[in-house]
Length: 199
Image 1 (tube, one colour):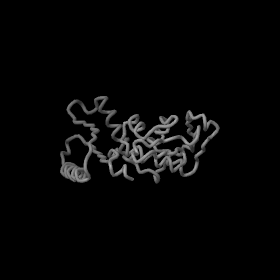
Image 2 (image 1 turned 45 degrees about the horizontal axis):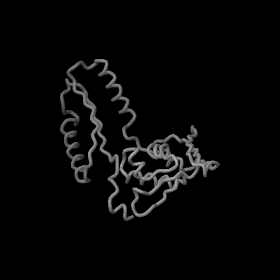
Image 3 (image 1 turned 30 degrees about the vertical axis):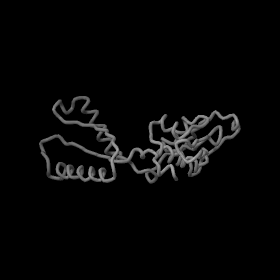
Image 4 (image 1 turned 45 degrees about the vertical axis):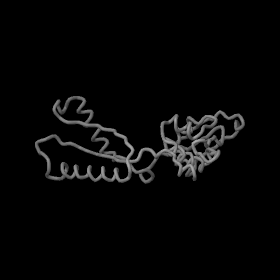
């Protein structure tokens, strides 16, 4: 099942231009950040303006703008050698995009659905007092800039802890059953530097 999503841009010179996207480019526009970029684009913004508004790095914004430009939804005006000053302009006054639900073979699940269900159920039960006041519960969401070596080291140390505490037969059978699901993934690109500006 699919529906249509629409955006209108305040550009008088393109007031009669309507862009309809229903081919494979619809999947490109299904990315939430790309759609958010289009929502705030207005009559046009620079890479730096979009980056500041959405609080993401210029490099990340530039990547998604280039993908949007490939669909023909926007034009990327390269003003000089500094990508932060490049401007993104809508290609039409209105864009209609077929909203195609992502399928399992298109986007890998960040966390399996059954794991999400188990964790949500456990947190509901914990909030209702099922486990009493002595059990341990922890939710952490941390962000940091790491080198590839640091990220690899973190992964190795985390796996070592999991192997120590979670192998079959280990632990205390009389204790509370705990679940742990960790995700270490890049969430932003580095800021644009001299090497990117030269490209």
